[in-house]
Image (cartoon, rainbow, N blue to C red; front, top):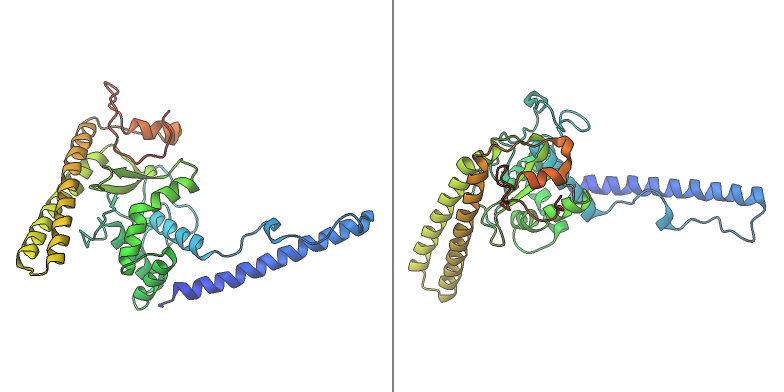
Length: 311
C-alpha cells in the first residue's frame, strides 16, 4: 500500500507530543506530591520547563536524517525490513534474512556528484530511491522524495538535493552521531570528489579494495571519459555562449576528477595487494588507520575521509 512520509511524520509528531505532554504532567504531579509532603510551597515550583522533560518532541529535519541513516543501514544489511532490531554486526552474513529489500552484494555504494550510474547496486542515491519505493510504495515515490528534499533544503530536483546531501553532509552527520567512531566508512579521493563511497565496517573483507578497482574505479573512469565526449559534442553544436561555457567548465572539472581518480587508484592498488584484514575487537581508531597503511613498511595511503583520530 502506498503511503506518504509526510503523513507518517505528522502521526509521529502527534504521538511524540502526546508522550511529551503526559510525561511532563507526570513529572509535575510528582513535584506537587514532593512539595506538599515536605511543606516547600514557598520555596519550590512544581512546574517543569519543556527543556527539562526527558523525552524529545518530533523534529522533521532530525527525523528525516534518521530515516536516511536507517535506509543506509538497510542498504548494507545492518538492518532488515523483515526482522526487527539490529540484524548484522559481524560474523557470518546471512543473505536469507533480507527478502523485502536486499542489501548491496559488494558492501559498497558509490557517492557521485552527478548521476553517473542508474544501477542501484552501484549508486547510493539510486539505492535510496529503491528503498523509499519499496517501503512507501511506487505510487507516492515522487511525493516522498520531494518531501525528503524539502526537509534537507536546497535547489534542484529532489534527487539532486538528496544526492548533494550524501556528497556533502551524510558522513559528517554520521561521524557526529557516532562520536567519530563511524560504522559506515567513506572512501574519499580528495577535494574534487573524483571517487567517494561508503562501506559497512562489519561486512568488510580483505577482497574489498580489489573489488573497488575492478567494479567501481574502472567503470567510473570510463563513465567520466564518456561524459567528457558527450559534453564536447554538446559544446560543438550549441550556439549559446553560456551553454558552451557551462559545458567547458564541466569538462575541466571532470578532467580534474580523472586525475584525482588515477592517483586514488594507485593507492588502492597498492593496498589491495596486501589483502589487509581488520579485527572488530581492535576498535574503529586502530582499524581505520590499519586499512590505510602498508602492513610491511607502514607507509600511509590516505583513502578514507578525515574525522577519525589516528591511534
